[in-house]
Image (tube, rainbow, N blue to C red; front, side, top):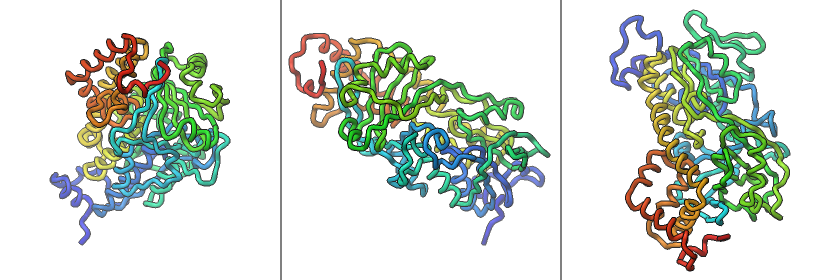
Length: 472
């Protein structure tokens, strides 16, 4: 027997069915949901909404407004080439029925190399579930359009379409209200009204500006400029020089916050974070000996393509309203790391709230916002973690202590590897920042670091493990 969706919802949640006329802010059979943006957040939301609705016999229609096909190389199909997902997220997606084919995962990452002016040290993934994978968000950079490339965003969007969502290949030009429901007007002038509008535009889209006057309580996230570029080296050279490692740089370069290179098939992606990031800062990084020695002949090749996208560094104010919710990095995202994981968590929370509770602002506040707040609180802790990281970047004495401690851990057999674990999770986003900070506050960690700082300042005596540390 098929239950009436409203009754099924309330049996599932344990709440009493609403009184007559009080359920207007709920999805019902025939409800229409509009999603602006077909990136990970929009696709995740649509996939989960349709899956959850089907589980209670609720028949809803989903339109995803996404003009890009993600089949062109470079800017036309770009969704910013940086893309890292953890092994644990890959496994969670598989459990949800979202399997990533080998053509989507460009490179498995099982280690990273920490580069400093004092030498380099390789750090293996603490456990298999801590490994990460490199993906292209779009269809890859300029000069790359092999037939076997399937960008992460395109794969998710096609999967969602096969689950029942309709992809509207139009750009949303305007959002307004009509008879108490949100209306989307496309660039061709056509309009459609929806029972729920989901904003998944990202923060590099002009569509964020559509909501300035529509939802007075909403304020867009604070952002920071980043730099991403691609170097085309060829698959053989990438394997020989970069292997299966992410390469992270602790550089004493003013205004630089983070620098890493990630191998992806024939290409290597360089990602930079920093204050007031500009061409001068990029040039300073590219001229650093630690970066140059990663390339054959110590020569940094010409860029295949580059961009200066923005990232979310502070959550949006009130990313929900009656019949409207913001998911992904146009709402809240994990600071500096795991943007795809943040999109997954916030999109699933929003879909669950909409299907099993309702689409009022109060429903989203109770059942969606806690997932966002958890990310926001963890980001506050992240600022402390990265402040310490920046201090290490600026201090040669601390850098030496960190590299020495890490090298000795990696050279030893068995035993705990606290510094290696902390660095891995800080640079890859494989654990909450709260967990990272708690590990550094255990008495043994600062004592071990202090000892390595002191020992590193003394003449080297060939201690076990220091053979793993080159360029001293």
